[in-house]
Length: 219
Image (tube, rainbow, N blue to C red; front, side, top):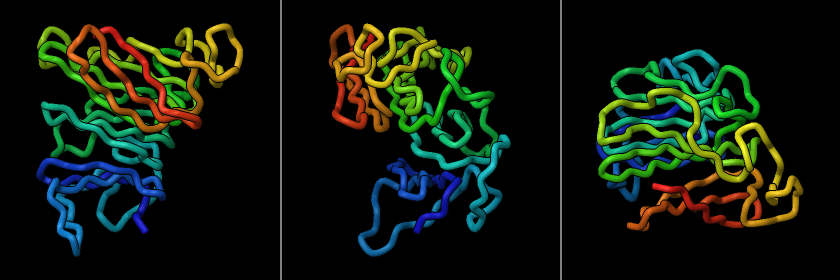
């Protein structure tokens, strides 16, 4: 059984996954067939043996997914606190940026049970995508533009998928306010994967309750 409410970090390139208990763990790329290696650091708890949930800056409540980008920045979907934590320095247990978290709900600056993360980048731009599960949508945040090094100039989403606007929350939104299954809508989206097609758009593979949906984002 994996203890909940923390993220374990290994020094090498990592594979991240979410366990049934809601804990997100990170391990070196090469795993021993008999025994998983120990982690080098832990985020969300004061020690490797603690597992209490919390809402403070150094706590987590049911982290569901982690993602990283080419600069080493780590993103954690802290689902129980309705936020995404951004760590630019993995030696620091305090996040540098917090997305959401004040109050759950709809809006470009709100999250409600974020469940999945994906990072897409080109030579000039990096975008963080968040599956905002209880709001039945995926949000996109411009992390870097123009090849700059800045991380998230603000915590307001720049793109929304699965809803016609940032202030709506309709399950399986069909584009007209209805709830019929359609290519436009999402239902409790979870896992995310972003693909670069080499063209002027990005393909997002979004796992929701019924299918894998494809959405295009201008890139």
